[in-house]
Length: 372
Image (cartoon, rainbow, N blue to C red; front, side):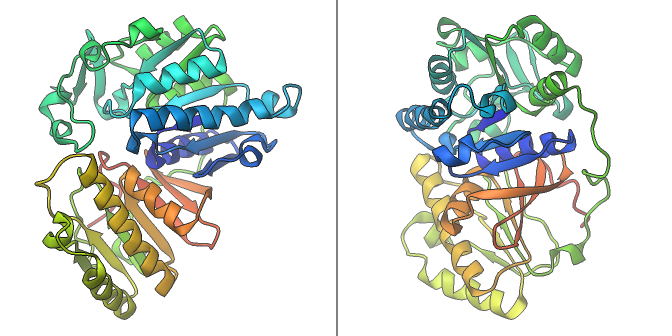
């Protein structure tokens, strides 16, 4: 199976689910013909970062990636080993959903798409066409303050008014059983399934008839000693920094505002990291919104982490927030990650080419597996 995700933490979440289903999994952060067409069994998860792009850029990137699929020979085992395509989208309705699904349908020959972002296992459901998070319409939650895709309505037809006209079905789902019924209804070989983790797990189980393998997901809490020799970025707008006894450096207000360059912060953070061997990076300010702000924040923190990793290779790098994680991995040149384990639903431990363990978590998920 091939999974195309619009951000890196979503991609990591899919990789973790496939890993728990006993699949051989590779997670790609950069795609070329050779990397996509490599004939390996199992699941290939591709992180595109299209959620952080403009709509036109997202369409172009989607076309570029699917062109690599068609560059493999039609009679090669690539098409046998990867007979299914799944499009991972955000479970909070963010991203260029219709544009990307329309492009995938056109380039890959699908007649329709089923878009189901509901995640009932996490309290995210669709009822009568309205999206709820733990019983609250999404436009009445913190997602209404998202800097790039603020939730201004909870009604899917209002959020995506051109979806149905483009062959995109948006069904209700209040439970995992509902998701199974949706798959049974539309799984005709000509439908592209797109959505969140609960949908992917159901599709994967239906395709492979696999049982969850034991020992891949930790159910116990992680304690403070776990964070020795660690770089930890709280990089999401949904972030609530943790008290783990680690030294902390907070992005200064003038750097956050863009009125001062990063030089002084680099020097301060580098000195702490050299002395302590671990460091948590936080962004305590929340008063600015907009795409340019989001770009500034993720690029600034990526530069800082690149500098710190060059000073001393950490045993592990923990990043919260998909855009921040992707920007950092691109800076570091870590384009393919080995999936090691799933620490908690959506929280995946991977291994970078240099041996550093990389743990990624979506910003809207909790840190419930960490014992403070």
